[in-house]
Length: 324
Image (cartoon, rainbow, N blue to C red; front, side):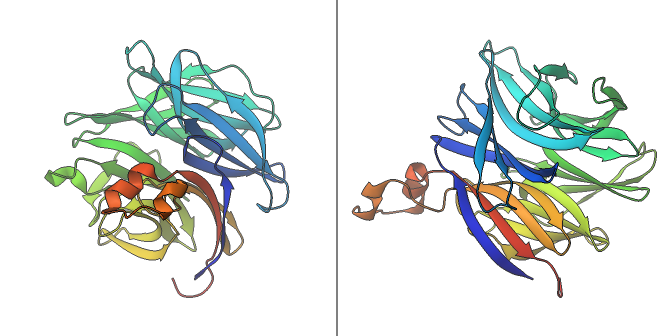
């Protein structure tokens, strides 16, 4: 396994973050949030397109809202359309609402459709046997998650009202392998015993889930199956915060780091596409310092660098063949 290439593909926003990646109609599409800061009321979802396997990228859409801060866009192809899922934090402080947009070409997008329950952040959608599944979360020490299902991409029913309620549960990734389902679930905070990630396992029809604690804290998860192995790209927190490709061992709960992407500080939230034995990854990071003044300043600590570093979008290619 080795890193083939990594390139910066977008830096024009003040804060560029929270990516996803898909191949649709022969082209690559990357979505991410643009805003003035990591948390700000002006988040919009920008979509880039590459017709040459990631060599060059063009901005093809910018989805904005006067009512919500749009965040965490996720892309999935479903029934011949490209769907965009995003969360919106309402400006009137009344909570958050998940939204879904659809497109026939990735360029022109429909109006937003509100889906799921208000107050539950529907994080990512995964298809299994022509149905869409996704986990919605309500954050906090007493937070919980719900499993949603849709047979048409319009109506999302609550498949499991109580999916996991172990506290501080939030971001998720689901993959299916034949009749088996796996869910990688993030937990916070770092100051309590609930900080390590969780792995849920189930079989169709995905009513009963068994959960186990992993041995690491993870963030911004995206998960995939490769040669019957459970891989994920996540943020790791031990030592230097970074974005890494890991293998998750369901039998032991071990999160094994396989490859570290160039990253530091405010980073992660990747999207992935498998192309034969290559893994293509979009992610964001703040490891490159954008403020030229820092080159002439005597920076005393890493935190001062991270506050002035600029988050930018990256596209990497990883060779997977060989020993994992």
